[in-house]
Length: 267
Image (tube, one colour):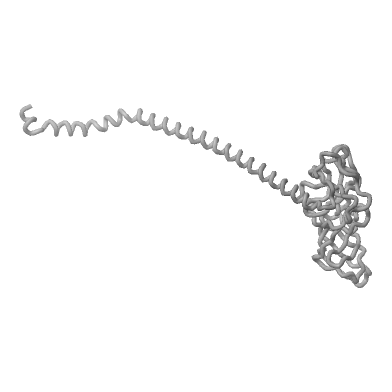
């Protein structure tokens, strides 16, 4: 004790003994430390996996909400376009959704979720926001069949906007393509000319966009020009259409317009 107090040799001894005992302490504590590390690691991983699942669910929910909002915005845009396209000749208009389509070389028809119970009648004008779609061919209680402009059995009286020349645009059986089979060879018609409804025929009002001339071919062997046009309305993209009721006294209204729509249709 006297020597330790004077020299401190026991402190050196304790230092050496601690160095020798350290590996033993590590060996004794390693199982418990390893278990604690393993448990913490798995708990952290489980918590991260749970958090990741919750975040993925939130992302999917946000994506669904974004899709619904985009769908509503598109529908609102289509309704605004329909209202603008109806024009002042339309007294009332009734929106409807396309719920079925038949498109082949012989038939181009649409099924719309509006029928006689909503006031829809035969041969009623149907438009999209970008132009004329066609007219009702059959009307059921809750739905209607619409024959489109591209149907080979359909023809619409049109007028070339640039020159005022009137003719018939006939469905070609190809989606969105019309032909003008009755134009004489010398008719002034060019690619890019806009075709509007002429108001003749008693079905469609005057001034509605129908199509744009796509190609013009003149063959000296035929007295008629070969003209094709692409419809203004894009049936493969439009989802919402409108049935129209016209003001009988309006100058552009067709003769024999359908009677006013019942209450509940969109003014």
